[in-house]
Picture 1 (cartoon, rainbow, N blue to C red):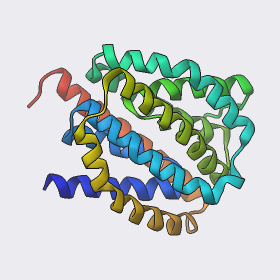
Picture 2: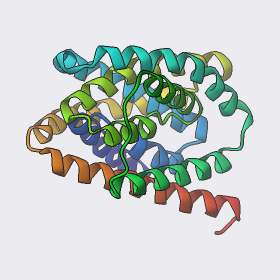
Picture 3: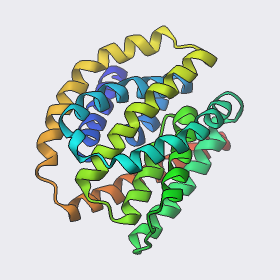
Length: 244
């Protein structure tokens, strides 16, 4: 049953990542934490996300906003070490609680038409936050998604730019975690089992992307963010208060 659950998580998150440019880490990580130790769950997410981003970028590189991408990467260089320290020192339950509240509040602001003005400083700041979240909990998506949604970025640019950033940030984050904490056999074995289903999700997600218009894309974005935020909130509160 756990293997079937694992495969379902991987396929669903792969389809979402491929069709929208985000979603694998946002959807997969909370559920992988139910099956694996936190460090293993985060590193499985990183490995599989590297595969997805690398495969997709070969076909959508033309849509990448290179200026924004460079500023994201520059900001993330400062955020990555901070996230690595968080990964080693902070309590994951309290960290998940903070992330869940942040996702829910910011998503509600977006639903009620709160808008963000894109700027070079904003790009770098978002890159830094995303970098710290990647090396700590393997979830770079929320700050990028909220920022792009708030600035009204078109879906093709959003998908391509986030995937390009993910490829960089996931590789660096995995190397940092490998250096400071190692990578277990469970991570390599589970990632190997998941790869065929990731490939299936890649093909299905590409077909879905062609059928999604901008309005549907935005609604899906909000649903994913709210669902993830609520799930993380309930899960972290349960762990915090030892509710069985």
